[in-house]
Length: 74
Length: 149
Image 1 (cartoon, one colour):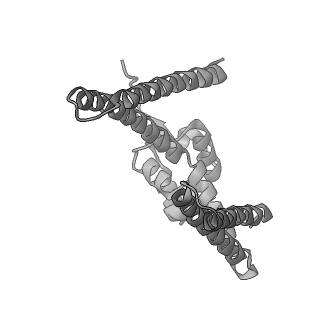
Image 2 (cartoon, chains in turn red, brown):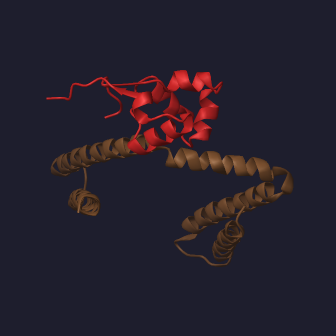
Protein backbone atom coordinates (compact mmCIF):
# COMPACT_ATOMS: atom_id res chain seq x y z
CA UNK A 1 0.00 0.00 0.00
CA UNK A 2 2.64 2.50 1.01
CA UNK A 3 5.42 1.49 -1.25
CA UNK A 4 6.69 -1.83 -2.21
CA UNK A 5 9.85 -3.58 -3.21
CA UNK A 6 8.91 -3.71 -6.86
CA UNK A 7 9.73 -0.12 -7.70
CA UNK A 8 13.11 1.58 -7.65
CA UNK A 9 13.71 5.20 -8.45
CA UNK A 10 16.45 7.69 -9.21
CA UNK A 11 14.74 10.65 -7.57
CA UNK A 12 17.43 11.23 -4.95
CA UNK A 13 20.22 11.01 -7.51
CA UNK A 14 18.51 13.40 -9.93
CA UNK A 15 17.64 15.83 -7.15
CA UNK A 16 21.24 15.91 -5.95
CA UNK A 17 22.50 16.39 -9.49
CA UNK A 18 20.43 19.55 -9.63
CA UNK A 19 21.84 20.71 -6.32
CA UNK A 20 18.51 20.72 -4.54
CA UNK A 21 17.80 19.66 -1.00
CA UNK A 22 14.63 17.75 -0.15
CA UNK A 23 12.89 20.87 1.08
CA UNK A 24 13.49 22.80 -2.12
CA UNK A 25 12.55 19.89 -4.32
CA UNK A 26 9.39 19.26 -2.30
CA UNK A 27 8.38 22.89 -2.66
CA UNK A 28 9.00 22.79 -6.41
CA UNK A 29 6.71 19.81 -6.94
CA UNK A 30 4.27 20.97 -4.23
CA UNK A 31 4.46 18.05 -1.83
CA UNK A 32 5.73 17.79 1.73
CA UNK A 33 9.39 17.10 2.47
CA UNK A 34 8.31 13.86 4.16
CA UNK A 35 6.77 12.66 0.91
CA UNK A 36 10.01 13.30 -0.97
CA UNK A 37 11.94 11.46 1.72
CA UNK A 38 9.52 8.51 1.64
CA UNK A 39 9.74 8.28 -2.16
CA UNK A 40 13.54 8.42 -2.12
CA UNK A 41 13.74 5.74 0.54
CA UNK A 42 11.35 3.49 -1.36
CA UNK A 43 8.83 3.57 1.48
CA UNK A 44 6.16 5.16 -0.65
CA UNK A 45 5.32 4.87 -4.34
CA UNK A 46 3.96 8.12 -5.72
CA UNK A 47 0.65 8.29 -7.54
CA UNK A 48 0.75 8.35 -11.32
CA UNK A 49 -0.06 12.05 -11.13
CA UNK A 50 2.92 12.79 -8.93
CA UNK A 51 5.18 10.49 -10.94
CA UNK A 52 4.35 12.58 -14.02
CA UNK A 53 5.01 15.81 -12.12
CA UNK A 54 8.40 14.48 -10.96
CA UNK A 55 9.39 13.25 -14.41
CA UNK A 56 8.27 16.55 -15.90
CA UNK A 57 10.38 18.42 -13.36
CA UNK A 58 13.50 16.49 -14.30
CA UNK A 59 12.68 16.55 -18.01
CA UNK A 60 12.68 12.78 -18.25
CA UNK A 61 10.15 10.05 -18.87
CA UNK A 62 8.60 8.14 -15.99
CA UNK A 63 10.44 4.98 -17.04
CA UNK A 64 13.77 6.78 -16.79
CA UNK A 65 13.10 7.66 -13.16
CA UNK A 66 10.97 4.83 -11.84
CA UNK A 67 12.12 1.32 -12.54
CA UNK A 68 9.68 -1.51 -12.25
CA UNK A 69 11.42 -4.60 -11.00
CA UNK A 70 8.56 -6.90 -11.98
CA UNK A 71 6.90 -9.75 -10.15
CA UNK A 72 3.24 -9.08 -9.47
CA UNK A 73 1.73 -10.60 -6.32
CA UNK A 74 0.01 -13.91 -6.83
CA UNK B 1 -5.78 37.80 5.02
CA UNK B 2 -9.38 37.59 3.88
CA UNK B 3 -11.84 40.22 5.10
CA UNK B 4 -14.35 37.42 5.72
CA UNK B 5 -12.06 36.12 8.49
CA UNK B 6 -12.38 39.43 10.29
CA UNK B 7 -16.16 39.43 9.85
CA UNK B 8 -16.33 35.91 11.29
CA UNK B 9 -14.10 36.93 14.22
CA UNK B 10 -16.32 39.91 14.97
CA UNK B 11 -19.45 37.74 14.74
CA UNK B 12 -17.97 35.18 17.15
CA UNK B 13 -16.97 37.97 19.57
CA UNK B 14 -20.48 39.45 19.40
CA UNK B 15 -21.98 36.04 20.23
CA UNK B 16 -19.55 35.86 23.17
CA UNK B 17 -20.66 39.30 24.38
CA UNK B 18 -24.33 38.30 24.07
CA UNK B 19 -23.67 35.17 26.13
CA UNK B 20 -21.83 37.31 28.69
CA UNK B 21 -24.73 39.77 28.98
CA UNK B 22 -27.30 36.99 29.32
CA UNK B 23 -25.13 35.30 31.97
CA UNK B 24 -24.80 38.56 33.93
CA UNK B 25 -28.37 39.81 33.73
CA UNK B 26 -30.37 36.61 34.01
CA UNK B 27 -30.42 33.79 36.46
CA UNK B 28 -31.14 30.43 34.91
CA UNK B 29 -29.96 26.86 35.28
CA UNK B 30 -27.87 27.47 32.17
CA UNK B 31 -25.60 30.04 33.87
CA UNK B 32 -22.61 27.71 33.98
CA UNK B 33 -23.09 26.82 30.35
CA UNK B 34 -23.40 30.48 29.37
CA UNK B 35 -20.17 31.39 31.17
CA UNK B 36 -18.51 28.54 29.33
CA UNK B 37 -19.82 29.80 25.99
CA UNK B 38 -18.74 33.34 26.90
CA UNK B 39 -15.18 32.24 27.55
CA UNK B 40 -15.03 30.09 24.45
CA UNK B 41 -16.58 32.58 22.00
CA UNK B 42 -14.76 35.62 23.38
CA UNK B 43 -11.47 33.74 23.50
CA UNK B 44 -11.76 32.46 19.94
CA UNK B 45 -13.17 35.74 18.59
CA UNK B 46 -10.52 37.99 20.14
CA UNK B 47 -7.69 35.60 19.26
CA UNK B 48 -8.90 35.50 15.65
CA UNK B 49 -9.04 39.29 15.47
CA UNK B 50 -5.53 39.64 16.88
CA UNK B 51 -4.35 37.04 14.35
CA UNK B 52 -6.08 38.93 11.53
CA UNK B 53 -4.47 42.28 12.36
CA UNK B 54 -1.06 40.67 12.88
CA UNK B 55 -1.04 38.93 9.50
CA UNK B 56 -2.82 41.74 7.67
CA UNK B 57 0.03 44.17 8.40
CA UNK B 58 2.15 44.78 5.28
CA UNK B 59 5.43 43.72 6.93
CA UNK B 60 4.05 40.21 7.52
CA UNK B 61 2.45 39.87 4.09
CA UNK B 62 5.24 37.91 2.45
CA UNK B 63 5.64 35.54 5.38
CA UNK B 64 1.90 34.99 5.53
CA UNK B 65 1.88 34.02 1.85
CA UNK B 66 4.63 31.48 2.51
CA UNK B 67 2.77 30.01 5.48
CA UNK B 68 -0.43 29.74 3.43
CA UNK B 69 1.43 28.02 0.62
CA UNK B 70 3.03 25.57 3.04
CA UNK B 71 -0.34 24.86 4.64
CA UNK B 72 -1.84 24.26 1.22
CA UNK B 73 0.95 21.81 0.39
CA UNK B 74 0.54 19.96 3.70
CA UNK B 75 -3.23 19.66 3.30
CA UNK B 76 -3.11 18.46 -0.31
CA UNK B 77 0.01 16.32 0.01
CA UNK B 78 -0.89 12.86 -1.31
CA UNK B 79 1.04 10.95 1.35
CA UNK B 80 -0.65 13.00 4.08
CA UNK B 81 -4.02 12.23 2.51
CA UNK B 82 -3.30 8.49 2.56
CA UNK B 83 -2.06 8.68 6.16
CA UNK B 84 -5.16 10.66 7.19
CA UNK B 85 -7.41 8.05 5.54
CA UNK B 86 -5.61 5.19 7.24
CA UNK B 87 -5.66 6.97 10.60
CA UNK B 88 -9.38 7.71 10.17
CA UNK B 89 -10.12 4.10 9.36
CA UNK B 90 -8.15 2.91 12.37
CA UNK B 91 -9.91 5.43 14.61
CA UNK B 92 -13.26 4.18 13.24
CA UNK B 93 -12.35 0.59 14.10
CA UNK B 94 -11.22 1.56 17.61
CA UNK B 95 -14.38 3.60 18.15
CA UNK B 96 -16.43 0.57 17.09
CA UNK B 97 -14.61 -1.66 19.58
CA UNK B 98 -14.85 0.97 22.33
CA UNK B 99 -18.62 1.25 21.83
CA UNK B 100 -19.13 -2.52 21.93
CA UNK B 101 -17.03 -2.77 25.09
CA UNK B 102 -18.96 0.15 26.64
CA UNK B 103 -22.28 -1.57 25.90
CA UNK B 104 -21.00 -4.68 27.68
CA UNK B 105 -19.70 -2.67 30.65
CA UNK B 106 -22.92 -0.65 31.05
CA UNK B 107 -24.97 -3.83 30.68
CA UNK B 108 -22.90 -5.56 33.32
CA UNK B 109 -23.01 -2.60 35.74
CA UNK B 110 -26.77 -2.33 35.29
CA UNK B 111 -27.39 -6.00 35.92
CA UNK B 112 -25.09 -5.88 38.95
CA UNK B 113 -27.21 -3.02 40.33
CA UNK B 114 -24.34 -0.57 40.30
CA UNK B 115 -26.00 1.72 37.78
CA UNK B 116 -29.57 2.91 37.53
CA UNK B 117 -31.21 3.58 34.16
CA UNK B 118 -28.37 1.77 32.47
CA UNK B 119 -30.58 0.86 29.51
CA UNK B 120 -30.61 4.51 28.38
CA UNK B 121 -26.84 4.32 27.89
CA UNK B 122 -27.07 0.90 26.29
CA UNK B 123 -29.74 2.00 23.80
CA UNK B 124 -27.84 5.19 23.04
CA UNK B 125 -24.65 3.24 22.37
CA UNK B 126 -26.46 0.68 20.21
CA UNK B 127 -27.96 3.58 18.24
CA UNK B 128 -24.51 5.11 17.84
CA UNK B 129 -23.14 1.77 16.66
CA UNK B 130 -25.88 1.40 14.05
CA UNK B 131 -25.41 5.02 12.96
CA UNK B 132 -21.67 4.48 12.49
CA UNK B 133 -22.25 1.33 10.50
CA UNK B 134 -24.91 2.90 8.25
CA UNK B 135 -22.75 5.99 7.67
CA UNK B 136 -19.77 3.83 6.78
CA UNK B 137 -21.70 1.67 4.32
CA UNK B 138 -23.46 4.68 2.78
CA UNK B 139 -20.18 6.58 2.36
CA UNK B 140 -18.47 3.52 0.90
CA UNK B 141 -21.26 2.96 -1.64
CA UNK B 142 -21.38 6.66 -2.48
CA UNK B 143 -17.67 6.85 -3.27
CA UNK B 144 -17.63 3.56 -5.14
CA UNK B 145 -20.53 4.71 -7.29
CA UNK B 146 -18.87 8.07 -7.85
CA UNK B 147 -15.49 6.62 -8.80
CA UNK B 148 -16.34 3.28 -10.40
CA UNK B 149 -19.75 4.20 -11.78
